[in-house]
Amino acid sequence: MASCVSCGSDVSFFDFSRECAACIAQRQQRAQAEAVALEQSRLDAQRQAAEQEAYRIAAAVQQSVAEVYASVQEYGATTLVHHVYTPVDSVVQKEKFATDFTLKYVRPWTQYGWKIVATVPRTVGIALRNPSITEPNGSGIGGNVAGVYILLQLEITAESIARQHKAIEAYFQAVHRG
Image 1: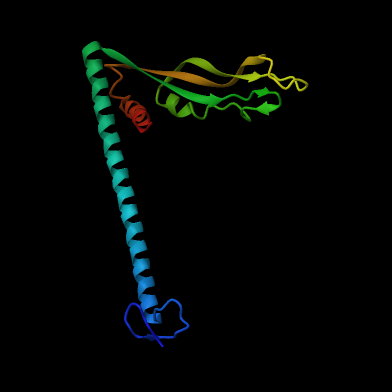
Image 2 (image 1 turned 135 degrees about the vertical axis):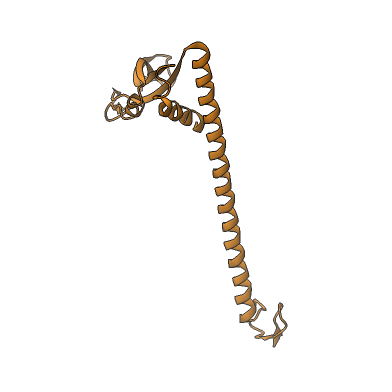
């Protein structure tokens, strides 16, 4: 007979773990409890970080909104600008950049009174290769529109600022969330 390495009780000589069943069960329970405690600690830290980030964003939004109100009070008006990217349904060398053109990314902004003032195309270039030559020959095609940046503007005046408050807050929440 051999002795359990944890409690000293008798265990079979052929039991290579050298631990009795009770000690094995206790060790597994401790390991499981430690894993549960570690997971709970991780979740608590994650929740606390999310709360701190939400507080930071709320404070930054509040500060930015206050700055807009101060600008309007001092200068009579101000303008916020923003951009939204949307892919364009173009095809280059049988490769589609998007299946269709959509304004679903713009609609939420225009519902708040933002106006589309310009678009800037996003283009891609493709190097051309001659399959019979192993080295690229330095030629290519460019200016293929893959999408557009839609530039938006919200003009804020002393007369409109009260009814635009939600739009201003929504803008700064988007800005400060990144």
